[in-house]
Image (cartoon, rainbow, N blue to C red; front, side, top):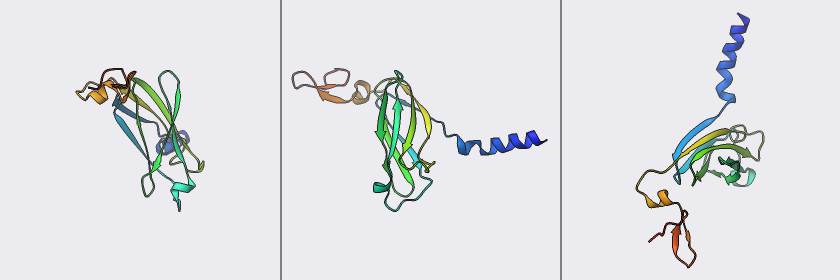
Length: 141
């Protein structure tokens, strides 16, 4: 009986300890992740920083800054050019803010299959002789 009570308590409180969000988007689409701060700040712009550490399928890490969106909401926007499974974790300058820091999850990026050339071929950049090309080298015009 005692073991059943302990197991019930663990299952009841588990969702508050484990975040583990999972997202699925296509290449070059924008993903917006919303987090809710567990603490209030007088001036969030000056008192706190939020970053998302993104790890791509090859193991390369990239830091993406988050931003305050009003009230207790914080957001991180990102876009991934290559298909595969990415993982992330959030890093908060206030280590006592468990609403923002230490959140983990995964992002499954599928190849883009729509008609939009910016999503299909990637962002624009300057090519070799001042031509505008997509990230994959496809001419823009």
